Image 1 (cartoon, rainbow, N blue to C red):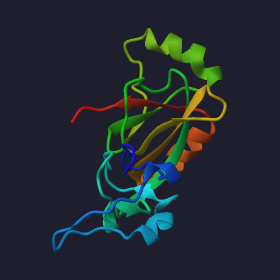
Image 2: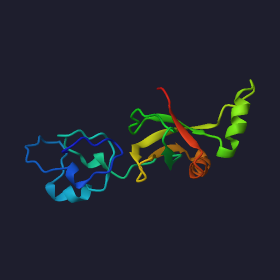
Image 3: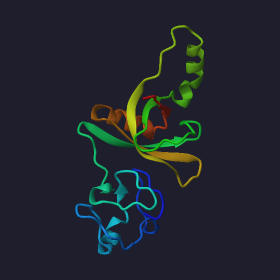
Image 4: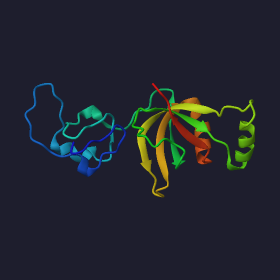
Length: 166
């Protein structure tokens, strides 16, 4: 690896290089002829610069049984600014529609204010800045029974992200 590639990132042509090495029996390496096959694949594990990617370290990102992958577009202020690498445990919170904002503000003043609904999720790939340069794209893995509701909320710009502790 010519640079650090985090788990979930897609490999580009400049990320991998060819080296000549002696390898002990049982150590898995990839021949230079397979280099082009790595481009466009995703890192399944963190691949630090200088490391040798093995056969299982690059490929399609698998889904855990019973889960679904959902893509989110988050405007500024809807997720933490701290790093969220693949594997980060988060909660995706349902936020009020813009027309509900005033009603929510009034409701929050009362002792009976409802806690917003949230869905536990795991970051599949670290957030990337969208082409509009004002929002972020984030892929998350959620329980399959929550995926449709979360995708619907995301399509209506009604989600925010909270990083959870261990």
